[in-house]
Length: 47
Image (cartoon, rainbow, N blue to C red):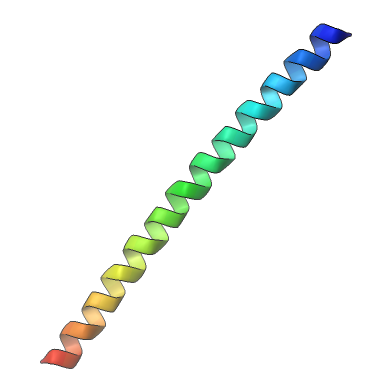
């Protein structure tokens, strides 16, 4: 029973790390996309 709990805990921790990676990747993509859009808007305003 203890081994089962330990394995489930390891799986849970691994899943949390994967979720954090996906979240960070998504946040970085959204930030870079937003920055790109802002740059595009400012370039249009300048011209």
